[in-house]
Length: 296
Length: 333
Image 1 (cartoon, one colour):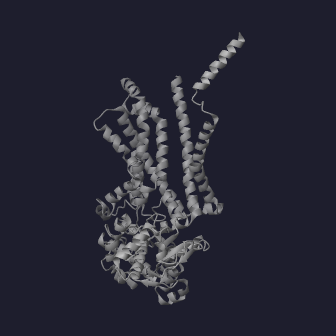
Image 2 (tube, rainbow over the protein chains, first blue to last red; image 1 turned 90 degrees about the vertical axis):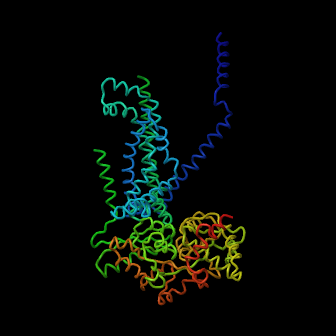
Image 3 (cartoon, rainbow over the protein chains, first blue to last red; image 1 turned 30 degrees about the vertical axis):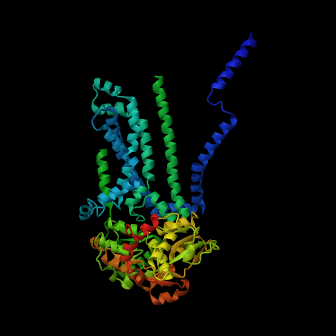
């Protein structure tokens, strides 16, 4: 009796094994895993390790003095200013745009979506040149700005504008699919129960999208701090005045100052790592709150 | 509340832009690629000189890049008090395209507004494995040549013209043969960087190419920074006298009221100390006493002048580097 059932069981088991997706021979599986790991270490871990080894090659003292150098500090400051202005602006815009697109039907909706995607499609260099053409001395508003002693390009406002342009789509792109999936049932319910517009926004819409929103902000921030192309065009490369961190890295590298260049690069790399950690935490929380909702 | 904060920060960002204080003067020197080290030294020296003379503290900001690109930035509104570019044509553009300086700017300072000169030499890897001795070796098939883009880089235009001048002399002024020669040279160029420093980095750091056509000062500097055991300088039989030119940008200094100090900044380049600093940074001084002192540092080359062989920068630019010019024909082949 028991003998028969065992045979039946092992037959059944064999059948499962046969139909499993991972039934490939071991060597195939290991080759694939090895290839993936090799690829990762070649293109991700190695450059990351290289940045830190190069940065510390001439010792910790050189590393620190490269970071507290006046030009480096001013580059960091400028990078943070650009991010501090670009991120909140794009956050507000992103929420507004995603809300309009996901919850309402209106004419020209697809045009709006296309426009939001424009910065993804346009090369950052072109983005920079657009601002030169508009605000440059030979550009549309150049003479007027010059007469009123206002500077846009080759000064902080130009760098902020370029940063805003390239980071424009991140929040909206993150939120649109999320809000579309959630639908508008909850908002409608709130409306029927007598909630005002602001109440719906603060009590219903925002809590539903908070993790997606945070994720979008993190991406926006990472891009804002790392942007090179567009900012390079409008910066003018004045040391200690209009250089952001990525531009500062390039300048130091071109001056044969490799240790300092990599020290500055390591700060950017650290920022990236912090961003990744934050991103993982946000994803984890988002998944947990999604599970909690399902269980209810 | 949040919104008003944005307005304030935007406004602040708009206002922060340059406004000089009473006795603290800032100057912006917009220069070409390889002068970083020269002007780092010179700025310190000038600040000291100016403090002693007037009591004012002057701090000089610098921006470096390909010479043509830098001229473009000044035309587009980069507030340069002084422009110290790689060649007269790029400075001419400040008049032509932006009316920022008068037409006869070059007569305002001595020596046609070129306070130091340089020339074009070859930088090769240690031991000279491809046996490059002169321009003829550079155009041989299989030799990889690094030079920046003549459209954006001043040094690259000097490189190009030096090769052209050599070919002309070799072929009894036959323009067709010269074009063929330079065409062969650019067939050997795998990558065009936008500025001289980018090209040097491509050659010395990334290890691409057998020979770098470089400013003499850039070649010396690369050798000094990266070790004389790694690279050799080869001096061709004929090269070109490169005259980097400087000017005060009138529209900017009048607006910022910095004309006096900006002019003094450039004039001091011609002084004994300015010339010494130039020579120490491997630029050929024009002041006789300093030139004599550093005679041994600079190899003797037979140098042609752009005015004699090419009829000046305006003409050379039009024939060779303008859209549809000889360089475009050569490089598209």
